Image 1 (cartoon, protein in one colour):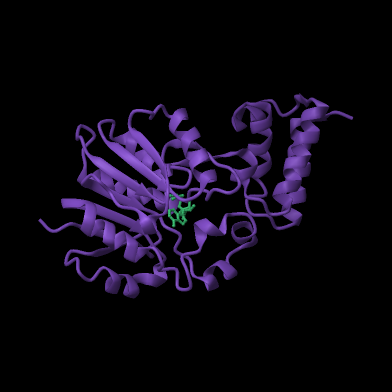
Image 2 (image 1 turned 45 degrees about the horizontal axis):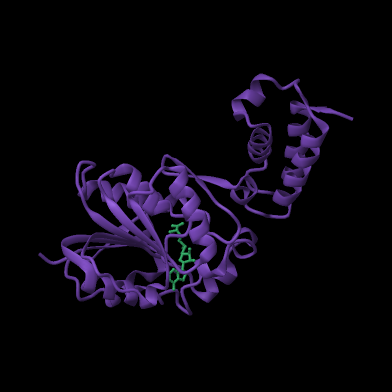
Length: 282
Ligand SMILES: C[S@@+](CC[C@H](N)C(=O)[O-])C[C@H]1O[C@@H](n2cnc3c(N)ncnc32)[C@H](O)[C@@H]1O
Protein backbone atom coordinates (compact mmCIF):
# COMPACT_ATOMS: atom_id res chain seq x y z
CA UNK A 1 0.00 0.00 0.00
CA UNK A 2 1.36 3.46 -0.85
CA UNK A 3 1.66 6.19 1.79
CA UNK A 4 1.68 9.95 1.71
CA UNK A 5 4.57 12.10 2.97
CA UNK A 6 2.45 13.10 5.96
CA UNK A 7 1.54 9.51 6.89
CA UNK A 8 5.15 8.35 6.73
CA UNK A 9 6.41 11.27 8.80
CA UNK A 10 3.77 10.93 11.52
CA UNK A 11 4.35 7.17 11.87
CA UNK A 12 8.16 7.50 11.91
CA UNK A 13 8.14 10.32 14.47
CA UNK A 14 5.93 8.27 16.78
CA UNK A 15 8.20 5.26 16.42
CA UNK A 16 11.40 7.21 17.21
CA UNK A 17 9.73 9.16 20.02
CA UNK A 18 8.58 5.93 21.70
CA UNK A 19 12.20 4.74 21.69
CA UNK A 20 13.41 8.08 23.14
CA UNK A 21 15.62 8.77 20.15
CA UNK A 22 17.20 12.23 20.16
CA UNK A 23 15.82 14.38 17.35
CA UNK A 24 12.80 12.05 16.94
CA UNK A 25 10.73 14.83 15.39
CA UNK A 26 13.30 16.15 12.94
CA UNK A 27 15.17 13.02 11.81
CA UNK A 28 12.26 11.59 9.73
CA UNK A 29 11.90 14.91 7.86
CA UNK A 30 15.60 15.00 7.05
CA UNK A 31 15.72 11.34 6.03
CA UNK A 32 12.68 11.59 3.75
CA UNK A 33 13.86 14.87 2.21
CA UNK A 34 17.24 13.21 1.55
CA UNK A 35 15.62 10.20 -0.14
CA UNK A 36 13.26 12.31 -2.25
CA UNK A 37 16.11 14.77 -3.03
CA UNK A 38 14.02 17.75 -1.93
CA UNK A 39 14.20 20.21 0.98
CA UNK A 40 12.28 19.52 4.18
CA UNK A 41 10.22 22.66 3.42
CA UNK A 42 9.06 20.90 0.23
CA UNK A 43 7.73 18.04 2.40
CA UNK A 44 5.77 20.50 4.53
CA UNK A 45 4.36 22.19 1.39
CA UNK A 46 3.18 18.90 -0.20
CA UNK A 47 2.19 16.60 2.70
CA UNK A 48 -0.44 14.71 0.66
CA UNK A 49 1.99 13.67 -2.09
CA UNK A 50 2.39 9.90 -2.44
CA UNK A 51 5.83 8.39 -1.79
CA UNK A 52 6.71 5.59 -4.26
CA UNK A 53 6.70 2.19 -2.48
CA UNK A 54 10.43 1.48 -3.13
CA UNK A 55 11.37 4.82 -1.51
CA UNK A 56 8.98 4.24 1.38
CA UNK A 57 10.67 0.85 1.99
CA UNK A 58 14.10 2.52 1.94
CA UNK A 59 12.77 5.22 4.31
CA UNK A 60 11.75 2.59 6.87
CA UNK A 61 15.17 0.90 6.59
CA UNK A 62 16.88 4.20 7.41
CA UNK A 63 14.45 4.93 10.25
CA UNK A 64 15.30 1.52 11.69
CA UNK A 65 19.02 2.38 11.61
CA UNK A 66 18.29 5.61 13.51
CA UNK A 67 16.08 3.66 15.94
CA UNK A 68 19.05 1.40 16.73
CA UNK A 69 21.14 4.48 17.60
CA UNK A 70 23.16 5.10 14.45
CA UNK A 71 24.01 8.83 14.17
CA UNK A 72 21.87 10.71 11.66
CA UNK A 73 24.98 12.09 9.90
CA UNK A 74 26.10 8.54 8.98
CA UNK A 75 22.60 7.69 7.73
CA UNK A 76 22.46 10.82 5.56
CA UNK A 77 26.18 10.64 4.68
CA UNK A 78 26.58 14.36 5.33
CA UNK A 79 26.98 16.97 8.03
CA UNK A 80 27.03 20.76 8.09
CA UNK A 81 30.22 22.31 9.44
CA UNK A 82 30.42 26.08 9.72
CA UNK A 83 28.68 27.04 6.46
CA UNK A 84 29.75 24.03 4.41
CA UNK A 85 28.13 20.69 3.72
CA UNK A 86 30.65 17.90 4.23
CA UNK A 87 30.51 14.25 3.39
CA UNK A 88 30.89 11.87 6.34
CA UNK A 89 30.90 8.10 6.60
CA UNK A 90 31.21 5.42 9.27
CA UNK A 91 34.86 5.20 10.32
CA UNK A 92 35.26 8.99 10.38
CA UNK A 93 34.43 11.33 13.26
CA UNK A 94 31.31 13.44 12.70
CA UNK A 95 32.37 17.11 12.94
CA UNK A 96 31.06 18.78 16.10
CA UNK A 97 29.60 22.30 16.40
CA UNK A 98 32.05 23.28 19.16
CA UNK A 99 34.97 22.70 16.76
CA UNK A 100 33.57 25.47 14.53
CA UNK A 101 34.79 28.05 17.05
CA UNK A 102 38.36 27.34 15.88
CA UNK A 103 37.39 28.98 12.58
CA UNK A 104 36.09 32.08 14.38
CA UNK A 105 39.32 32.36 16.37
CA UNK A 106 41.44 32.06 13.20
CA UNK A 107 39.42 34.85 11.57
CA UNK A 108 40.58 37.17 14.34
CA UNK A 109 44.23 36.64 13.34
CA UNK A 110 44.22 36.18 9.55
CA UNK A 111 42.55 38.13 6.78
CA UNK A 112 41.03 36.60 3.61
CA UNK A 113 43.54 38.52 1.47
CA UNK A 114 46.52 37.04 3.32
CA UNK A 115 48.83 34.33 1.98
CA UNK A 116 49.78 31.82 4.66
CA UNK A 117 50.63 28.19 5.23
CA UNK A 118 48.83 26.02 7.73
CA UNK A 119 48.54 22.45 8.95
CA UNK A 120 45.41 20.64 10.10
CA UNK A 121 46.67 17.75 12.18
CA UNK A 122 44.25 14.85 12.75
CA UNK A 123 42.04 16.15 9.97
CA UNK A 124 39.33 13.42 9.94
CA UNK A 125 36.65 14.52 7.44
CA UNK A 126 38.88 17.52 6.68
CA UNK A 127 36.35 19.88 8.31
CA UNK A 128 38.92 22.33 9.68
CA UNK A 129 41.38 22.32 6.78
CA UNK A 130 38.61 22.58 4.20
CA UNK A 131 36.82 25.45 5.96
CA UNK A 132 40.09 27.35 6.44
CA UNK A 133 40.94 26.91 2.75
CA UNK A 134 37.47 28.17 1.75
CA UNK A 135 37.62 31.23 4.05
CA UNK A 136 41.20 32.09 3.08
CA UNK A 137 41.57 31.51 -0.67
CA UNK A 138 45.29 32.39 -0.69
CA UNK A 139 46.17 29.98 2.14
CA UNK A 140 47.73 26.60 1.48
CA UNK A 141 47.40 23.74 3.89
CA UNK A 142 48.54 20.25 4.69
CA UNK A 143 45.97 17.93 6.29
CA UNK A 144 47.32 14.92 8.16
CA UNK A 145 45.55 11.82 9.45
CA UNK A 146 46.64 8.30 10.26
CA UNK A 147 43.38 6.77 9.01
CA UNK A 148 43.00 5.80 5.34
CA UNK A 149 39.23 5.95 5.69
CA UNK A 150 39.37 9.50 7.06
CA UNK A 151 41.63 10.62 4.22
CA UNK A 152 39.29 9.03 1.67
CA UNK A 153 36.42 11.14 3.04
CA UNK A 154 38.63 14.26 3.36
CA UNK A 155 39.65 13.78 -0.26
CA UNK A 156 36.00 13.68 -1.39
CA UNK A 157 35.35 16.87 0.58
CA UNK A 158 38.41 18.51 -0.93
CA UNK A 159 37.09 17.76 -4.45
CA UNK A 160 33.52 18.72 -3.58
CA UNK A 161 34.74 22.17 -2.50
CA UNK A 162 37.27 22.60 -5.35
CA UNK A 163 40.34 22.82 -3.16
CA UNK A 164 42.76 20.79 -5.25
CA UNK A 165 45.31 23.62 -5.46
CA UNK A 166 45.11 24.62 -1.82
CA UNK A 167 45.22 21.40 0.18
CA UNK A 168 47.61 18.50 0.39
CA UNK A 169 46.30 15.41 2.21
CA UNK A 170 48.90 13.19 3.87
CA UNK A 171 48.53 9.86 5.61
CA UNK A 172 50.83 9.54 8.61
CA UNK A 173 51.07 9.71 12.36
CA UNK A 174 51.25 12.93 14.30
CA UNK A 175 53.66 11.15 16.62
CA UNK A 176 56.23 10.77 13.81
CA UNK A 177 55.57 13.87 11.79
CA UNK A 178 58.13 16.58 10.95
CA UNK A 179 57.65 19.62 8.75
CA UNK A 180 60.07 20.84 6.11
CA UNK A 181 58.25 24.18 5.92
CA UNK A 182 57.66 26.84 8.53
CA UNK A 183 53.97 27.27 9.28
CA UNK A 184 51.88 30.34 10.07
CA UNK A 185 49.08 28.32 11.63
CA UNK A 186 48.66 24.89 13.19
CA UNK A 187 45.18 23.62 14.06
CA UNK A 188 44.32 20.27 15.53
CA UNK A 189 41.40 18.41 16.98
CA UNK A 190 43.28 15.34 18.20
CA UNK A 191 41.65 12.33 19.87
CA UNK A 192 41.42 13.58 23.47
CA UNK A 193 39.02 11.42 25.47
CA UNK A 194 40.27 9.25 28.32
CA UNK A 195 39.32 5.56 28.53
CA UNK A 196 36.79 6.53 31.19
CA UNK A 197 35.20 9.29 29.06
CA UNK A 198 34.85 6.96 26.06
CA UNK A 199 33.30 4.33 28.32
CA UNK A 200 30.80 6.90 29.67
CA UNK A 201 29.89 8.33 26.24
CA UNK A 202 26.53 7.61 24.61
CA UNK A 203 25.88 4.50 22.49
CA UNK A 204 25.72 6.83 19.50
CA UNK A 205 29.34 7.86 20.11
CA UNK A 206 31.03 4.77 21.49
CA UNK A 207 28.98 2.31 19.48
CA UNK A 208 29.36 4.00 16.10
CA UNK A 209 32.23 6.49 15.94
CA UNK A 210 35.81 5.26 15.49
CA UNK A 211 37.69 4.82 18.76
CA UNK A 212 40.84 5.81 16.86
CA UNK A 213 39.30 9.29 16.58
CA UNK A 214 38.12 9.49 20.18
CA UNK A 215 40.69 7.95 22.44
CA UNK A 216 43.76 9.94 23.43
CA UNK A 217 45.36 7.36 25.73
CA UNK A 218 44.65 6.70 29.40
CA UNK A 219 44.08 10.38 30.36
CA UNK A 220 43.28 11.64 26.86
CA UNK A 221 46.50 13.69 26.78
CA UNK A 222 48.64 11.48 24.54
CA UNK A 223 48.85 13.80 21.52
CA UNK A 224 49.54 17.18 23.16
CA UNK A 225 53.30 16.66 23.74
CA UNK A 226 53.63 15.86 20.01
CA UNK A 227 51.73 19.03 19.16
CA UNK A 228 54.04 20.98 21.49
CA UNK A 229 57.06 19.55 19.63
CA UNK A 230 55.59 20.67 16.31
CA UNK A 231 55.00 24.22 17.61
CA UNK A 232 58.67 24.36 18.65
CA UNK A 233 59.90 22.85 15.41
CA UNK A 234 57.63 24.35 12.75
CA UNK A 235 55.61 27.34 13.92
CA UNK A 236 56.89 30.72 12.68
CA UNK A 237 57.45 33.56 15.15
CA UNK A 238 54.01 35.08 15.85
CA UNK A 239 52.44 31.97 14.30
CA UNK A 240 49.19 30.68 15.81
CA UNK A 241 48.46 27.26 17.30
CA UNK A 242 44.94 26.16 18.31
CA UNK A 243 43.94 22.69 19.45
CA UNK A 244 40.68 21.39 20.84
CA UNK A 245 40.74 19.69 24.24
CA UNK A 246 38.48 18.26 26.91
CA UNK A 247 37.24 20.70 29.58
CA UNK A 248 38.74 18.34 32.16
CA UNK A 249 42.31 18.81 30.88
CA UNK A 250 42.96 22.49 31.63
CA UNK A 251 45.54 22.01 34.41
CA UNK A 252 47.40 19.18 32.64
CA UNK A 253 47.56 21.24 29.45
CA UNK A 254 48.94 24.26 31.31
CA UNK A 255 51.76 21.97 32.46
CA UNK A 256 52.37 20.40 29.02
CA UNK A 257 52.48 23.83 27.33
CA UNK A 258 54.20 25.67 30.19
CA UNK A 259 57.15 26.71 28.00
CA UNK A 260 54.83 29.08 26.11
CA UNK A 261 54.29 32.21 28.22
CA UNK A 262 51.31 33.39 26.19
CA UNK A 263 49.37 30.14 26.44
CA UNK A 264 45.60 30.68 26.71
CA UNK A 265 42.82 28.22 27.40
CA UNK A 266 39.77 29.45 25.48
CA UNK A 267 36.22 28.52 26.42
CA UNK A 268 33.55 27.26 24.02
CA UNK A 269 30.10 28.88 23.71
CA UNK A 270 28.83 26.76 26.60
CA UNK A 271 31.55 28.23 28.84
CA UNK A 272 33.67 25.04 29.00
CA UNK A 273 37.47 25.13 28.65
CA UNK A 274 37.77 23.82 25.11
CA UNK A 275 40.83 25.12 23.23
CA UNK A 276 44.56 25.46 23.84
CA UNK A 277 45.87 28.58 22.13
CA UNK A 278 49.46 29.70 21.67
CA UNK A 279 50.88 32.62 19.72
CA UNK A 280 54.53 31.81 19.19
CA UNK A 281 57.20 34.04 20.76
CA UNK A 282 58.27 36.97 18.59
C1 LIG B 1 38.81 13.90 17.13
S1 LIG B 1 39.06 13.36 15.47
C2 LIG B 1 39.06 14.93 14.67
C3 LIG B 1 38.63 14.89 13.24
C4 LIG B 1 38.37 16.29 12.65
N1 LIG B 1 39.53 17.14 12.71
C5 LIG B 1 37.21 16.95 13.35
O1 LIG B 1 37.42 17.97 14.04
O2 LIG B 1 36.08 16.48 13.22
C6 LIG B 1 40.73 12.87 15.53
C7 LIG B 1 41.36 12.34 14.25
O3 LIG B 1 42.71 11.97 14.57
C8 LIG B 1 43.07 10.85 13.80
N2 LIG B 1 44.23 10.20 14.44
C9 LIG B 1 44.24 9.29 15.44
N3 LIG B 1 45.50 8.97 15.77
C10 LIG B 1 46.31 9.70 14.94
C11 LIG B 1 47.72 9.81 14.78
N4 LIG B 1 48.58 9.10 15.55
N5 LIG B 1 48.20 10.65 13.85
C12 LIG B 1 47.36 11.37 13.05
N6 LIG B 1 46.01 11.30 13.15
C13 LIG B 1 45.50 10.49 14.10
C14 LIG B 1 41.81 10.02 13.73
O4 LIG B 1 41.85 9.15 12.63
C15 LIG B 1 40.73 11.10 13.63
O5 LIG B 1 40.41 11.35 12.28
